[in-house]
Image (cartoon, rainbow, N blue to C red; front, side, top):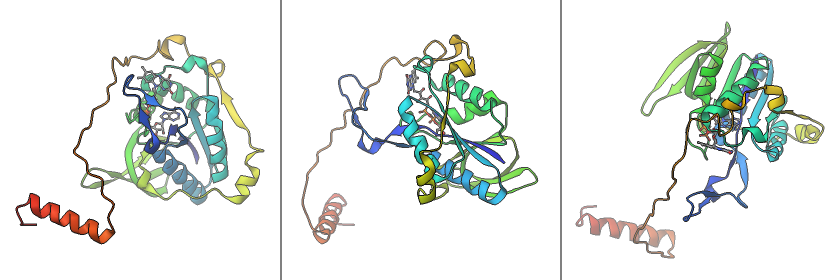
Length: 262
Ligand SMILES: Cc1cc2nc3c(=O)[nH]c(=O)nc-3n(C[C@H](O)[C@H](O)[C@H](O)COP(=O)(O)OP(=O)(O)OC[C@H]3O[C@@H](n4cnc5c(N)ncnc54)[C@H](O)[C@@H]3O)c2cc1C
């Protein structure tokens, strides 16, 4: 099974601040990580390969620095990594990004495409489904478990808020994964040892040959007019307490709020 996993490098949003004047993310000095839903996709692909054979290819679109993240994925055991990077792609919205990713996918052999459900920075959850549309293949989103694969058919569970649905789909198809799907493996010493020798295949628009009208700002139907930061103001009290004192304080506060009922 040839599996392509779409992986985005994202800022570690737990350490992210927002510029209150401009409303933009302050990225300077913020560490980057593999998008968590995508790491689950990589793990799922490696598990499928181990059970059924095949190849795991990672595709990422981003600036040249993304290469270090891709090296990390080699250390986890993926077979090949492609970095799609070109100044011509700057300013692409989710539509143009999906167009670029699906054009690159079409240049490769694939049976299954795995995308994360959502990127923790952009947060739109649009890219996976849009890529499936551009590829004209079926898709199942919000995968919480991959249950089986036989007769060229994938059996999965799709998560809804309060229930799950078992579904099956013939390959080729695209699935989007949730970070709770599995526990990603650690990097393996053998792969860490070999990762520097592994090449990252670069793709630019010379390879993809996309018209300027469908990429970058020109090819992006989404226009962002304004970004604003919600001013969260709460009456906060900071207390230094032992766990027992903290528990008592919470209980006292709840009882006070609840007129002594809690
Ligand atoms: C007008 C406009 C201009 C923009 N300009 C820029 C810009 O200049 N530079 C910039 O970095 N961003 C830019 N963006 C943001 C960029 O379009 C999004 O980050 C990108 O389309 C992914 O959207 P998302 O983060 O919501 O991903 P989601 O749709 O939430 O991601 C879902 C999944 O899709 C896959 N995926 C998403 N993005 C990638 C990727 N790049 N590579 C591989 N897989 C991916 C991953 O598997 C991910 O888990 C711009 C957005 C707009 C609206």
